[in-house]
Length: 444
Image (cartoon, rainbow, N blue to C red; front, top):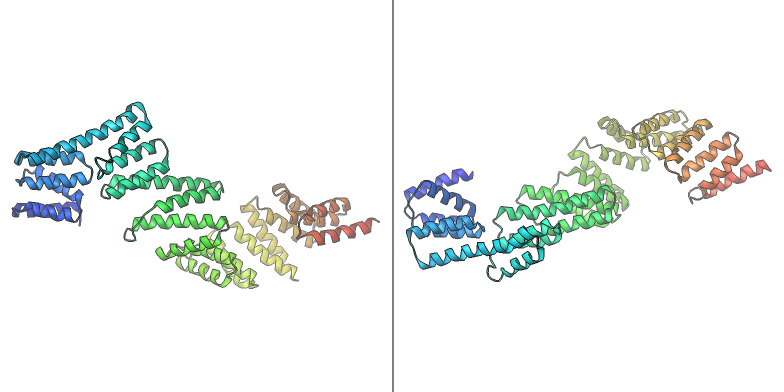
């Protein structure tokens, strides 16, 4: 029910029942202090007669929100009905507390004296230990000085003392958001070590309730950031643990299931990886990355027809999906290398499509060089090997293919030089040396 409707109902009760303080007490006991203030303001606005204790209790509720102005206003109303020493002493205490905080803040606001202002505010904690506004004010000073870690500490204390004041929670969440934003910036620069520090600081200071859907969304988003960062740091067990806790909160997070599949694949658990990929597309049938991942698993499981089924679906969803074109090209190249030479034409088509959408894909350039060399089109074999090396200068696969192309073109010295570069990789060391030895025999 909306607050306005609640207020109207309570007002109706106030009009019909002389014991209005009891109705107010119910709100106070349920800690609905904001409703207490709204109700009291309506009572004053409508000039509804109430006993002094009604306004005294309203003043106490306002003070629990650190709303000094309202607390003083309501207490003044109580005094106008029943002027007594206890009420006036309370009045003096609230006015003094507000004044002391204002004086403590003055050295920062007017003179920018950070240490003095913070020391003055901290000294007030002994006298006003239940006043969260003091902790909040210290936090705001640290926030202005961009000392976010210290600001977070004081905002957390303010929320602990007074969990009813919305602006305290907003300030706490703002600071946590700053750490997440900084983490995002480091992540974008691929500084994953620093990014994880920022994310973890936010995560360890973020409190949430499973009953609050917005808070759940925030923690889920942060868990996913942590999971991805752990993945790129190759801390797969931590990534997996975070992802498993994430999907326990949100069973529809298809990106999390896909990433969990990636983690399981890294651990060699291919069947479980595939299950998570399939679950990802079950949740979102248009998630092209999961289709690619499934296609890659079927490819390396020597099931090219199944692989093509999912890879072609990936391209249907994302027409410029270079990685999917590349993987289909690999399938056809493998088929051609296995004896079906007509599939080289298909491999070339898909590799060229991949490059058209990703012009710096050096691996595809090297693969194209290999295809053209197998077709004995050494000019194009040489071209694509050189194109690859321009982008990835020390890529051994390209040097090996360049050696094959140069040899096919009769450029034996250039071929030896290329094979020598390929030899620097253990992958090509033996076969490159074999090619060098063959050429040297021809030269002798």
